[in-house]
Length: 391
Image (cartoon, rainbow, N blue to C red; front, side, top):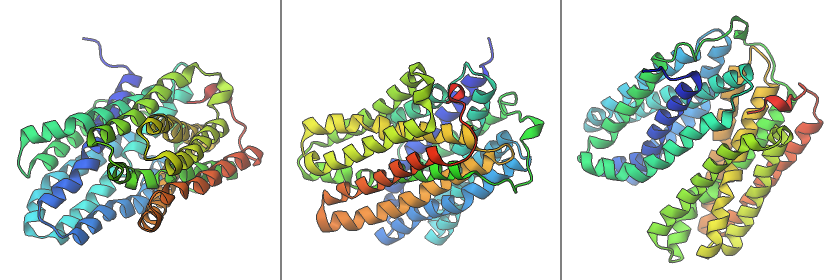
């Protein structure tokens, strides 16, 4: 039986990790609620991993620039992730403060996983012009969608309060196994290590800021889209279908992007497309967010608002991050994304409580700021972009 190729290994890593994310995001809050915890405690426990990832991702990813192999970081992170999930039921039985400590450990362990796989994928794309980041990364989006759709059925079949942590433990171990079996994929060239003092160019900082602002403009729809739609009488089955449409649009973009001319796969145009789509979506949600016929095309814009923005950010890291600082660049992007998204989500909560759909409209200026930063990056001095080697 032939062994999977390098790109196939990377796709498998994305699939396993995003399956874990696709189970954890919707079902961990339900598991915490089933423990009988107070709503304020649940809120605290859900906020802890976000804050932890903001603080931990960039320092952990900078270890790659000092010679730590990404495969080893994925392997160690996956093992620690599985251990923390396995211990959560026992910790919950002792008391929520101990559970909180495990959740922090869990967030630290999981923080570098996706950035590490992105790091490996971009390295593979730079070394082989036949590969594309979008096609490899697409496996993660497909796995996330399937986990959302099948997760509820699987957890119901497993039953009991152990189902969520048990399943997540197995998935984390699976990621570790794939990383362990991916020695050739994860090999680093000797020149990749740095001393940690290499500065990131201004152009890259502008692209990171642009991507973070555009991704943060999802805050209102992620946090309150489903609540608003059901409040307007849209059936729950359609609410689920709308989210699935968004992910399918994202997958379609990842699949079709390599067919576009190289000039359209550069950071500025991808980030610009994501920003313009985010502005249109924010305005559309404010004006027509209670009309099902309008929501279908609005959700299709997710392919650009998330997909094009993600690809633009990866193109910027690939093109502008200097050797010896690529790990730090990847970690900084993830940390800034998380930080601005937290602020946007908190702000959208205040806005939604005060003005309902006004919260969606207030995301438009955030996306516009991202557009401005993306355009500014074109004028900034920095590394010249090689458009024919874009993800």
